[in-house]
Image (tube, rainbow, N blue to C red; front, side, top):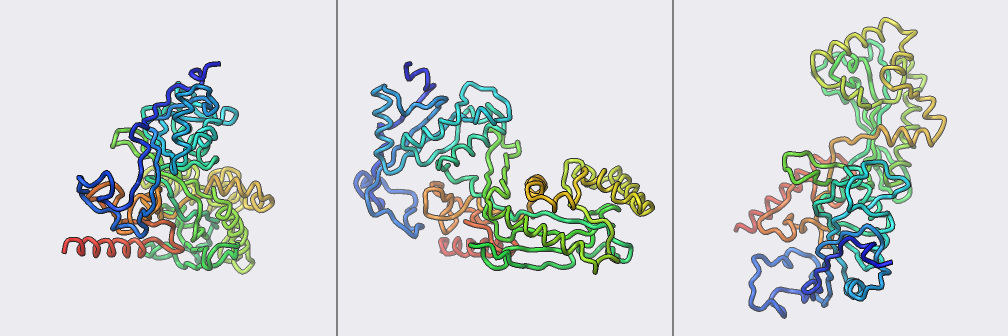
Length: 426
């Protein structure tokens, strides 16, 4: 069968794409050109040895093609394989046909074998840009990313390395004396760091907060929560443009708990916190204990507004007036039937709950991380690689998430960047 039936399009721009890097500006081929900025001065590591980069302009493949017998295709593949770095712009999509759940539209969607085939062709770094990224919807976009990562292909760094502190809560219905009397006070009464002791994780890698008020409405004022999170997370997600329209919100996929270390620690913390919530010493403080649920229904009724305020006041009144029905009302109207006993009885059930209800704590970092490697978006001085006069001075430059709240760290980053800008100006 002709290879053309496997390959929709492989536009290999290699006339000038096998580029020899010669180190500092002014070397061979650059004597008559003065760069606008000496980027090598920003890098802790300078290129001192020659290297080759094979850059492929557009790759649109729907079937494996590395074994094609066509001499032209094999010649192009050899150039990529022989280079030190093989870089391509992947314009199509790939999906696992046996597992993919999403729209199947578009003619540029290939099979999962394409990912491994690109690796076999010699590609090590892929960019994503083109007219077909949304042919299979959001699901197709994320599926392509996952399959690429599974075979060890990496994408250009902008939008990658998204890291958050993953959190889950266990809540309790509070007795009247235990409720927060002064609603002007902050809802968090105490915060404690502790260590998971999981191998490879630093001390103080976990955190728990005690909340005597779990919401702005009448029900939230009667519910206390033990709110805990992984204070040093390793799971990485991504931020991707939804379309070329700047008014559209981006696609954000945190992939929290995708790193096994994060899931294991949050599972252990859930059991630890559940033991605290069920301790006999708290019997006079709280009654019903339940796993916090951030379902679409809960989010909808939690939005501030008169209608939601009235609904929550009615439900809070029912819970207070009908103690025998309190657990049933919470299981039916709040948790969707998920009970603490069910979760504690089985790790698989607990893991499914954690993956479904995990949320962040407003500490996202890392999508424009600084560094000197090919996936770094900014230099150690905050300059965006390849863009003159542009710096990033916020939490997105952090290579990893701090084992702490990101507030002070972000202030320190901004102050340091301000000092560097002033130094350059002087």
